[in-house]
Image 1 (cartoon, rainbow, N blue to C red):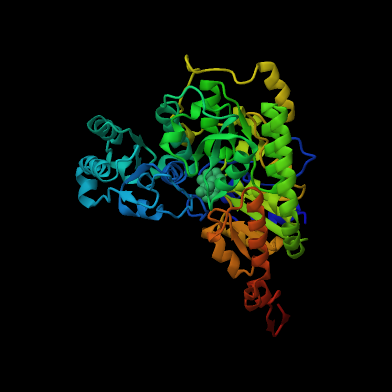
Image 2 (cartoon, rainbow, N blue to C red):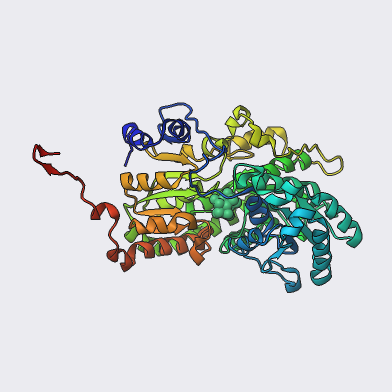
Length: 537
Ligand code: CFM
């Protein structure tokens, strides 16, 4: 199902020349024979073009902070930003102490016109006081929305004053929506302050159990991290913290005690992973808990890192049992899915991670991409030094960390680290492009025009993306699977997740509803013409 350069050019030719020049750089056809295929990413969307991206506030408050359950997250701004980021991401959490789980609440300063004119600082201070009074949380976050930056409210000063008034940490995030070209900027802003203020704030010097690890970039959408943790705990790992799915201030503050950091979503959290390595000497391992092969490989790599024979044996035992249990279940769904094709376009990591799971049920991904990832998520981390820093990137403060004098301890000797790096992806991510087949299309920041054009060209059997394009796609007669929210389903990670995914995708194909829809290209004549006195035109 390869696409030719000519076919791609025909799509791009429909753009005005300036737009065409821009979009050409964001799309390529995978060709393994070419040594380095460069893509432009993490740059501004052309004004007027509709894409699926979100804003810096969404990336900070919605994505990274939102799942932390024992903190109250205040949105400082008009009510819309708080309201639309209220429980829409399906990051689940349960707590042993139900009075310390605030995820179901939406707390906002609900700024009015008079606050915009006269300033919102007093109102913010009052809301923080109320939050302490009502909820007694372990920690409070304040996230700024666009107007807050425009009118110049000093949220850091308000937070500092409240912190000394109440003796509770109050963290201020200047994540105004416009701070970057997408939600990616918000991830970075959130990472910085969690690193500066939360991680390492705990007293613990050593983790309580064996093989202590942190799971970074796992947000427990539809219960994903619960399924992953089920397996990790059975093998014998101690999960110190999850960043940030079903996570908490209480766990995060002692995250420095882990011996290894796992990175699921590289895009949203590689900053913390890197900083933890510099500050505490803890390496990170790129894992992928989506798909059976991804899960097994990740577990084996973890066992190899610790290098303990008993751990390796237990890992193999659990893998053998789980795979034998789920394989027949997957097999029945594979009969429905086999030979089909998919588009897989998600935010900043799932566009890659789900390709393996699709392949396991017989579906080939012919187009993939990310809304807001950076070049390294496509091409691999080796390109980082060559990425140009533009004005938009410079907007986000870089946090400079150094080795912690008391707590820095190399977890693995430099020699051992080099040896391990040959075998497992330690402190490295190879990106999406390497695993894709020649002839498949890779698109950054796909827009609605291109969505329709590529569907017409490649006629995929399923399109995995999100709510913003789901119904456009379905109206074209293609089943659409939301890979952000999982369409009210999940978990999709780990062994049980793979079965759920195979079932849900099969249901998408088997639904009789498709018989009632006629895609536009089947309803329109392929040729149009008129007959005049001179002949046919
Ligand atoms: Fe990471 Fe995510 Fe993603 Fe992301 Fe997101 Fe998400 Fe996502 Mo939606 S943190 S980059 S900002 S894996 S909310 S849980 S699904 S776009 S691909």
